[in-house]
Image (cartoon, rainbow, N blue to C red; front, side):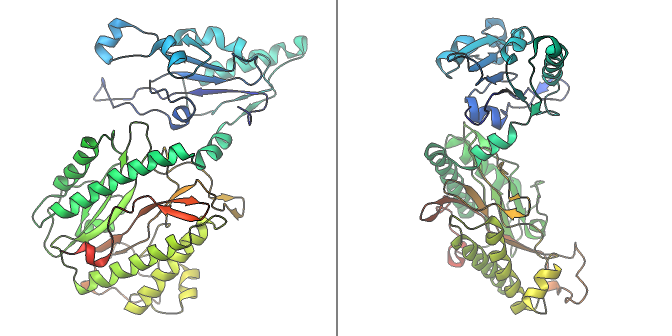
Length: 425
Protein backbone atom coordinates (compact mmCIF):
# COMPACT_ATOMS: atom_id res chain seq x y z
CA UNK A 1 0.00 0.00 0.00
CA UNK A 2 2.84 2.39 0.87
CA UNK A 3 4.64 1.69 -2.41
CA UNK A 4 1.52 2.34 -4.48
CA UNK A 5 1.67 6.00 -3.50
CA UNK A 6 -1.61 7.49 -4.74
CA UNK A 7 -2.31 4.78 -7.29
CA UNK A 8 -5.34 2.51 -6.84
CA UNK A 9 -4.61 -1.18 -7.41
CA UNK A 10 -7.11 -3.58 -8.96
CA UNK A 11 -5.92 -7.17 -8.40
CA UNK A 12 -8.16 -9.97 -9.76
CA UNK A 13 -8.24 -13.56 -8.56
CA UNK A 14 -8.00 -16.50 -10.94
CA UNK A 15 -11.14 -17.81 -12.65
CA UNK A 16 -12.03 -21.47 -12.86
CA UNK A 17 -10.69 -23.32 -15.90
CA UNK A 18 -12.58 -26.10 -17.66
CA UNK A 19 -11.58 -29.25 -19.51
CA UNK A 20 -13.64 -32.06 -21.08
CA UNK A 21 -16.25 -29.46 -22.08
CA UNK A 22 -17.76 -28.85 -18.65
CA UNK A 23 -15.40 -30.25 -15.97
CA UNK A 24 -13.29 -27.83 -14.00
CA UNK A 25 -9.65 -28.24 -13.11
CA UNK A 26 -8.83 -28.08 -9.39
CA UNK A 27 -8.75 -24.39 -8.54
CA UNK A 28 -5.36 -22.68 -8.28
CA UNK A 29 -5.41 -19.10 -7.04
CA UNK A 30 -3.42 -16.33 -8.71
CA UNK A 31 -0.25 -16.04 -6.63
CA UNK A 32 -0.20 -12.22 -6.52
CA UNK A 33 -3.81 -12.15 -5.36
CA UNK A 34 -3.18 -14.84 -2.74
CA UNK A 35 -0.05 -13.09 -1.48
CA UNK A 36 -2.08 -9.96 -0.79
CA UNK A 37 -5.29 -11.51 0.51
CA UNK A 38 -4.97 -15.18 1.50
CA UNK A 39 -8.41 -15.56 -0.12
CA UNK A 40 -8.68 -18.84 -2.04
CA UNK A 41 -11.87 -18.53 -4.08
CA UNK A 42 -12.23 -17.80 -7.81
CA UNK A 43 -13.24 -14.60 -9.59
CA UNK A 44 -12.77 -12.28 -6.59
CA UNK A 45 -11.26 -8.80 -7.02
CA UNK A 46 -9.12 -6.98 -4.46
CA UNK A 47 -8.84 -3.18 -4.38
CA UNK A 48 -5.98 -1.44 -2.59
CA UNK A 49 -6.89 2.23 -2.33
CA UNK A 50 -4.29 4.38 -0.56
CA UNK A 51 -6.06 7.53 -1.76
CA UNK A 52 -9.21 6.66 0.23
CA UNK A 53 -9.89 7.45 3.91
CA UNK A 54 -8.90 5.01 6.65
CA UNK A 55 -11.29 2.08 6.73
CA UNK A 56 -11.92 2.20 2.96
CA UNK A 57 -8.50 1.18 1.64
CA UNK A 58 -8.79 -2.61 1.38
CA UNK A 59 -11.91 -3.78 -0.44
CA UNK A 60 -12.81 -7.28 -1.62
CA UNK A 61 -15.47 -8.23 -4.16
CA UNK A 62 -16.37 -11.90 -3.71
CA UNK A 63 -19.03 -14.45 -4.57
CA UNK A 64 -21.77 -14.13 -1.90
CA UNK A 65 -22.98 -16.99 0.25
CA UNK A 66 -25.44 -19.06 -1.77
CA UNK A 67 -26.73 -22.36 -0.31
CA UNK A 68 -27.88 -23.65 -3.71
CA UNK A 69 -24.47 -23.01 -5.32
CA UNK A 70 -22.63 -24.35 -2.29
CA UNK A 71 -24.49 -27.66 -2.52
CA UNK A 72 -22.86 -28.16 -5.92
CA UNK A 73 -19.50 -26.47 -5.54
CA UNK A 74 -18.71 -26.19 -1.84
CA UNK A 75 -18.45 -23.61 0.89
CA UNK A 76 -18.03 -19.88 0.21
CA UNK A 77 -16.84 -17.31 2.73
CA UNK A 78 -19.10 -14.58 1.35
CA UNK A 79 -18.82 -10.89 2.14
CA UNK A 80 -18.95 -11.27 5.92
CA UNK A 81 -16.25 -13.92 5.86
CA UNK A 82 -14.09 -11.68 3.65
CA UNK A 83 -14.17 -9.08 6.43
CA UNK A 84 -14.06 -11.34 9.47
CA UNK A 85 -11.56 -13.94 8.24
CA UNK A 86 -9.46 -12.14 5.62
CA UNK A 87 -9.20 -8.61 6.97
CA UNK A 88 -11.06 -6.73 4.25
CA UNK A 89 -12.25 -3.36 5.50
CA UNK A 90 -15.23 -3.53 3.13
CA UNK A 91 -16.58 -6.45 1.10
CA UNK A 92 -19.21 -6.49 -1.64
CA UNK A 93 -20.89 -9.19 -3.72
CA UNK A 94 -19.01 -9.70 -6.96
CA UNK A 95 -21.98 -8.70 -9.09
CA UNK A 96 -21.68 -5.14 -7.73
CA UNK A 97 -18.16 -4.65 -9.10
CA UNK A 98 -19.14 -2.72 -12.24
CA UNK A 99 -21.47 -0.48 -10.23
CA UNK A 100 -19.09 0.37 -7.39
CA UNK A 101 -15.63 0.30 -9.00
CA UNK A 102 -15.86 3.75 -10.67
CA UNK A 103 -16.40 5.46 -7.32
CA UNK A 104 -13.58 3.52 -5.65
CA UNK A 105 -11.14 4.52 -8.41
CA UNK A 106 -12.23 8.15 -8.43
CA UNK A 107 -9.48 10.42 -7.13
CA UNK A 108 -6.59 8.02 -7.67
CA UNK A 109 -3.61 9.49 -9.50
CA UNK A 110 -3.07 6.25 -11.42
CA UNK A 111 -4.63 2.80 -11.74
CA UNK A 112 -2.38 -0.19 -11.03
CA UNK A 113 -3.68 -3.05 -13.14
CA UNK A 114 -2.02 -5.86 -15.09
CA UNK A 115 -3.27 -5.51 -18.67
CA UNK A 116 -3.48 -8.46 -21.05
CA UNK A 117 -4.27 -11.13 -18.46
CA UNK A 118 -7.83 -10.66 -17.14
CA UNK A 119 -10.21 -10.46 -20.11
CA UNK A 120 -13.39 -10.07 -18.03
CA UNK A 121 -12.04 -7.31 -15.76
CA UNK A 122 -9.81 -5.39 -18.16
CA UNK A 123 -12.63 -3.84 -20.28
CA UNK A 124 -14.27 -2.59 -17.10
CA UNK A 125 -11.07 -0.96 -15.83
CA UNK A 126 -10.27 0.59 -19.20
CA UNK A 127 -13.84 1.89 -19.60
CA UNK A 128 -13.73 3.53 -16.15
CA UNK A 129 -10.38 5.14 -16.94
CA UNK A 130 -11.72 6.33 -20.31
CA UNK A 131 -14.73 7.92 -18.61
CA UNK A 132 -12.40 9.69 -16.17
CA UNK A 133 -10.41 11.07 -19.11
CA UNK A 134 -13.59 12.23 -20.83
CA UNK A 135 -14.65 14.15 -17.71
CA UNK A 136 -11.20 15.53 -16.94
CA UNK A 137 -11.61 18.79 -18.94
CA UNK A 138 -14.68 19.61 -16.81
CA UNK A 139 -13.73 18.28 -13.37
CA UNK A 140 -9.95 18.66 -13.62
CA UNK A 141 -9.27 15.18 -12.31
CA UNK A 142 -8.43 11.77 -13.77
CA UNK A 143 -5.96 8.98 -13.27
CA UNK A 144 -2.81 9.95 -15.16
CA UNK A 145 -2.29 6.45 -16.52
CA UNK A 146 -2.24 2.72 -16.03
CA UNK A 147 0.75 1.33 -14.16
CA UNK A 148 1.74 -2.28 -13.64
CA UNK A 149 1.47 -3.54 -10.06
CA UNK A 150 3.82 -6.41 -10.86
CA UNK A 151 7.17 -4.67 -10.20
CA UNK A 152 6.07 -3.70 -6.68
CA UNK A 153 4.46 -7.05 -5.89
CA UNK A 154 7.29 -9.11 -7.28
CA UNK A 155 9.96 -7.20 -5.38
CA UNK A 156 7.98 -7.88 -2.22
CA UNK A 157 7.46 -11.55 -3.03
CA UNK A 158 11.14 -12.08 -3.80
CA UNK A 159 12.11 -11.52 -0.17
CA UNK A 160 10.31 -13.96 2.10
CA UNK A 161 9.15 -13.08 5.59
CA UNK A 162 9.98 -15.37 8.54
CA UNK A 163 6.48 -16.85 8.33
CA UNK A 164 6.89 -17.56 4.62
CA UNK A 165 10.26 -19.19 5.21
CA UNK A 166 8.73 -21.43 7.86
CA UNK A 167 6.05 -22.57 5.41
CA UNK A 168 8.74 -23.28 2.83
CA UNK A 169 10.66 -25.35 5.39
CA UNK A 170 7.53 -27.47 5.79
CA UNK A 171 7.09 -27.89 2.02
CA UNK A 172 10.74 -28.78 1.59
CA UNK A 173 10.69 -31.24 4.48
CA UNK A 174 7.69 -33.14 3.08
CA UNK A 175 9.25 -33.09 -0.40
CA UNK A 176 12.57 -34.44 0.92
CA UNK A 177 10.86 -37.23 2.86
CA UNK A 178 9.03 -38.26 -0.31
CA UNK A 179 12.32 -38.50 -2.20
CA UNK A 180 13.81 -40.66 0.53
CA UNK A 181 10.77 -42.96 0.35
CA UNK A 182 11.06 -43.24 -3.43
CA UNK A 183 14.73 -44.16 -3.28
CA UNK A 184 14.04 -46.77 -0.61
CA UNK A 185 11.23 -48.43 -2.60
CA UNK A 186 12.52 -48.21 -6.18
CA UNK A 187 13.55 -51.49 -7.79
CA UNK A 188 14.26 -52.65 -11.36
CA UNK A 189 11.08 -53.63 -13.20
CA UNK A 190 8.89 -51.02 -11.55
CA UNK A 191 7.21 -48.45 -13.76
CA UNK A 192 8.05 -44.77 -13.53
CA UNK A 193 4.37 -44.14 -12.79
CA UNK A 194 4.55 -46.34 -9.67
CA UNK A 195 7.35 -44.18 -8.28
CA UNK A 196 5.38 -41.05 -9.14
CA UNK A 197 2.39 -42.44 -7.26
CA UNK A 198 4.56 -43.17 -4.21
CA UNK A 199 5.88 -39.63 -4.12
CA UNK A 200 2.62 -37.82 -4.77
CA UNK A 201 0.74 -40.09 -2.38
CA UNK A 202 3.23 -39.15 0.33
CA UNK A 203 2.69 -35.47 -0.42
CA UNK A 204 -1.05 -35.78 0.14
CA UNK A 205 -0.83 -38.08 3.15
CA UNK A 206 1.53 -35.56 4.77
CA UNK A 207 -0.98 -32.74 4.46
CA UNK A 208 0.20 -31.07 1.26
CA UNK A 209 -2.20 -29.93 -1.46
CA UNK A 210 -0.35 -32.15 -3.93
CA UNK A 211 2.56 -31.83 -6.37
CA UNK A 212 3.84 -28.33 -6.99
CA UNK A 213 4.36 -29.09 -10.70
CA UNK A 214 4.30 -32.07 -13.03
CA UNK A 215 6.56 -34.59 -11.35
CA UNK A 216 9.49 -35.82 -13.46
CA UNK A 217 10.26 -39.50 -12.90
CA UNK A 218 12.76 -40.34 -15.63
CA UNK A 219 14.64 -43.61 -15.90
CA UNK A 220 17.72 -44.05 -18.06
CA UNK A 221 17.82 -41.97 -21.23
CA UNK A 222 14.48 -40.34 -20.35
CA UNK A 223 16.44 -38.23 -17.84
CA UNK A 224 18.12 -36.49 -20.76
CA UNK A 225 14.73 -34.90 -21.58
CA UNK A 226 14.68 -31.97 -19.18
CA UNK A 227 10.91 -31.69 -18.76
CA UNK A 228 10.03 -35.36 -19.19
CA UNK A 229 6.62 -36.00 -17.58
CA UNK A 230 5.32 -39.01 -19.51
CA UNK A 231 6.39 -41.20 -16.59
CA UNK A 232 5.26 -44.53 -18.02
CA UNK A 233 8.47 -46.46 -18.84
CA UNK A 234 9.77 -49.56 -17.10
CA UNK A 235 12.81 -49.01 -14.89
CA UNK A 236 15.78 -50.98 -16.17
CA UNK A 237 18.47 -52.70 -14.15
CA UNK A 238 21.70 -50.70 -14.56
CA UNK A 239 20.04 -47.36 -15.35
CA UNK A 240 19.77 -44.24 -13.22
CA UNK A 241 16.47 -42.74 -12.09
CA UNK A 242 16.12 -38.95 -12.02
CA UNK A 243 13.24 -37.64 -9.89
CA UNK A 244 12.37 -33.93 -9.96
CA UNK A 245 9.39 -33.47 -7.65
CA UNK A 246 8.18 -31.23 -4.86
CA UNK A 247 4.97 -30.62 -2.98
CA UNK A 248 2.75 -27.58 -2.71
CA UNK A 249 1.10 -26.71 0.60
CA UNK A 250 -2.47 -25.55 1.13
CA UNK A 251 -1.20 -21.96 0.98
CA UNK A 252 0.79 -22.66 -2.20
CA UNK A 253 4.33 -22.52 -0.82
CA UNK A 254 6.43 -25.08 -2.66
CA UNK A 255 9.36 -27.42 -2.51
CA UNK A 256 11.41 -28.34 -5.58
CA UNK A 257 13.95 -31.17 -5.30
CA UNK A 258 15.82 -33.30 -7.81
CA UNK A 259 17.72 -36.45 -6.92
CA UNK A 260 19.33 -39.05 -9.20
CA UNK A 261 20.26 -42.54 -8.09
CA UNK A 262 20.98 -46.02 -9.51
CA UNK A 263 17.84 -48.11 -9.87
CA UNK A 264 19.61 -51.30 -8.76
CA UNK A 265 21.47 -49.55 -5.95
CA UNK A 266 24.95 -49.49 -7.54
CA UNK A 267 26.54 -46.90 -9.83
CA UNK A 268 28.45 -48.00 -12.91
CA UNK A 269 31.88 -46.41 -13.29
CA UNK A 270 30.58 -43.88 -15.81
CA UNK A 271 27.53 -43.03 -13.71
CA UNK A 272 29.61 -42.57 -10.60
CA UNK A 273 32.11 -40.33 -12.40
CA UNK A 274 29.43 -38.03 -13.80
CA UNK A 275 27.40 -38.01 -10.58
CA UNK A 276 30.51 -36.99 -8.63
CA UNK A 277 31.09 -34.07 -11.00
CA UNK A 278 27.51 -32.84 -10.67
CA UNK A 279 27.57 -33.21 -6.89
CA UNK A 280 30.84 -31.28 -6.62
CA UNK A 281 29.42 -28.54 -8.84
CA UNK A 282 26.24 -28.30 -6.78
CA UNK A 283 28.03 -28.17 -3.45
CA UNK A 284 30.46 -25.52 -4.74
CA UNK A 285 27.54 -23.41 -6.01
CA UNK A 286 25.65 -23.68 -2.72
CA UNK A 287 28.79 -22.67 -0.82
CA UNK A 288 28.85 -19.27 -2.54
CA UNK A 289 25.19 -18.44 -1.75
CA UNK A 290 25.41 -15.46 0.58
CA UNK A 291 24.11 -11.87 0.66
CA UNK A 292 25.78 -9.64 -1.93
CA UNK A 293 26.54 -12.47 -4.37
CA UNK A 294 24.52 -12.68 -7.58
CA UNK A 295 22.62 -15.68 -8.93
CA UNK A 296 24.89 -15.28 -11.94
CA UNK A 297 27.87 -16.06 -9.69
CA UNK A 298 26.11 -19.16 -8.35
CA UNK A 299 25.58 -20.39 -11.91
CA UNK A 300 29.11 -19.54 -12.96
CA UNK A 301 30.58 -21.42 -10.01
CA UNK A 302 28.68 -24.60 -10.88
CA UNK A 303 29.49 -24.25 -14.58
CA UNK A 304 33.26 -24.06 -14.00
CA UNK A 305 33.23 -27.25 -11.93
CA UNK A 306 31.10 -29.05 -14.52
CA UNK A 307 33.33 -28.03 -17.42
CA UNK A 308 36.53 -28.94 -15.61
CA UNK A 309 35.05 -32.31 -14.67
CA UNK A 310 34.02 -33.00 -18.25
CA UNK A 311 37.51 -32.05 -19.44
CA UNK A 312 39.02 -34.50 -16.95
CA UNK A 313 36.72 -37.26 -18.23
CA UNK A 314 37.51 -36.53 -21.89
CA UNK A 315 33.95 -35.56 -22.77
CA UNK A 316 35.25 -32.06 -23.54
CA UNK A 317 38.64 -30.87 -24.76
CA UNK A 318 40.40 -27.51 -24.63
CA UNK A 319 40.83 -24.70 -22.13
CA UNK A 320 37.99 -24.44 -19.61
CA UNK A 321 37.55 -20.68 -20.02
CA UNK A 322 37.48 -20.97 -23.81
CA UNK A 323 34.95 -23.82 -23.66
CA UNK A 324 32.69 -21.72 -21.41
CA UNK A 325 33.04 -18.59 -23.53
CA UNK A 326 32.16 -20.46 -26.73
CA UNK A 327 29.37 -22.46 -25.10
CA UNK A 328 30.92 -25.73 -26.24
CA UNK A 329 29.48 -27.50 -23.19
CA UNK A 330 25.84 -26.83 -24.04
CA UNK A 331 25.18 -30.22 -25.64
CA UNK A 332 25.82 -31.68 -22.18
CA UNK A 333 24.50 -28.90 -19.91
CA UNK A 334 21.89 -26.65 -21.47
CA UNK A 335 20.08 -24.89 -18.61
CA UNK A 336 20.79 -22.41 -15.85
CA UNK A 337 21.71 -23.53 -12.36
CA UNK A 338 18.61 -22.34 -10.54
CA UNK A 339 15.57 -20.11 -10.17
CA UNK A 340 13.65 -18.25 -7.48
CA UNK A 341 11.22 -20.32 -5.41
CA UNK A 342 8.15 -19.33 -3.39
CA UNK A 343 4.42 -19.21 -4.10
CA UNK A 344 5.32 -20.20 -7.66
CA UNK A 345 7.87 -22.90 -8.40
CA UNK A 346 9.57 -20.63 -10.92
CA UNK A 347 8.89 -17.69 -8.68
CA UNK A 348 8.67 -14.04 -9.59
CA UNK A 349 11.53 -11.58 -9.27
CA UNK A 350 14.09 -10.19 -11.67
CA UNK A 351 17.48 -11.82 -12.17
CA UNK A 352 18.96 -8.75 -13.80
CA UNK A 353 18.22 -5.04 -13.63
CA UNK A 354 19.35 -3.93 -17.05
CA UNK A 355 22.95 -5.06 -17.35
CA UNK A 356 23.42 -5.50 -13.61
CA UNK A 357 22.73 -8.91 -12.02
CA UNK A 358 20.44 -8.85 -8.99
CA UNK A 359 22.40 -9.59 -5.83
CA UNK A 360 21.16 -11.99 -3.20
CA UNK A 361 19.60 -10.61 -0.02
CA UNK A 362 18.47 -12.27 3.17
CA UNK A 363 15.01 -13.79 2.69
CA UNK A 364 15.44 -14.77 -0.95
CA UNK A 365 15.05 -18.46 -1.81
CA UNK A 366 16.58 -20.06 -4.88
CA UNK A 367 17.13 -23.53 -6.24
CA UNK A 368 20.64 -24.77 -7.03
CA UNK A 369 20.40 -27.51 -9.65
CA UNK A 370 23.30 -28.24 -11.97
CA UNK A 371 23.09 -31.31 -14.19
CA UNK A 372 24.67 -33.28 -17.01
CA UNK A 373 22.73 -34.97 -19.82
CA UNK A 374 24.71 -37.22 -22.13
CA UNK A 375 22.85 -38.18 -25.29
CA UNK A 376 23.00 -37.70 -29.04
CA UNK A 377 19.97 -35.38 -29.17
CA UNK A 378 22.09 -32.27 -29.71
CA UNK A 379 25.00 -32.00 -32.15
CA UNK A 380 28.50 -32.04 -30.71
CA UNK A 381 30.14 -28.61 -31.24
CA UNK A 382 32.93 -28.47 -33.79
CA UNK A 383 36.23 -29.38 -32.21
CA UNK A 384 34.69 -31.35 -29.34
CA UNK A 385 34.91 -35.17 -29.15
CA UNK A 386 32.10 -37.41 -30.28
CA UNK A 387 30.39 -39.12 -27.36
CA UNK A 388 31.22 -42.79 -26.89
CA UNK A 389 28.23 -45.11 -26.52
CA UNK A 390 29.09 -46.15 -22.96
CA UNK A 391 28.39 -42.56 -21.79
CA UNK A 392 25.07 -42.13 -23.59
CA UNK A 393 21.78 -42.31 -21.76
CA UNK A 394 23.09 -40.90 -18.50
CA UNK A 395 21.10 -37.92 -17.20
CA UNK A 396 21.90 -36.48 -13.76
CA UNK A 397 20.56 -33.46 -11.90
CA UNK A 398 20.89 -32.62 -8.21
CA UNK A 399 18.68 -29.83 -6.87
CA UNK A 400 18.26 -28.24 -3.46
CA UNK A 401 16.26 -25.26 -2.21
CA UNK A 402 18.44 -22.67 -0.51
CA UNK A 403 17.34 -19.68 1.59
CA UNK A 404 19.68 -16.71 1.86
CA UNK A 405 20.17 -15.45 5.42
CA UNK A 406 22.35 -12.88 7.16
CA UNK A 407 25.13 -15.39 7.84
CA UNK A 408 25.08 -17.06 4.42
CA UNK A 409 22.42 -19.63 3.63
CA UNK A 410 20.19 -22.42 4.86
CA UNK A 411 19.57 -25.58 2.79
CA UNK A 412 15.85 -26.14 3.22
CA UNK A 413 15.94 -29.59 1.58
CA UNK A 414 18.72 -31.05 3.71
CA UNK A 415 16.63 -34.13 4.62
CA UNK A 416 17.05 -35.45 1.07
CA UNK A 417 20.36 -37.36 0.95
CA UNK A 418 22.68 -36.85 -2.02
CA UNK A 419 26.15 -38.23 -1.24
CA UNK A 420 27.48 -40.98 -3.49
CA UNK A 421 27.35 -43.49 -0.65
CA UNK A 422 23.77 -42.56 0.29
CA UNK A 423 22.59 -43.09 -3.29
CA UNK A 424 23.78 -46.70 -3.21
CA UNK A 425 22.49 -49.64 -1.20
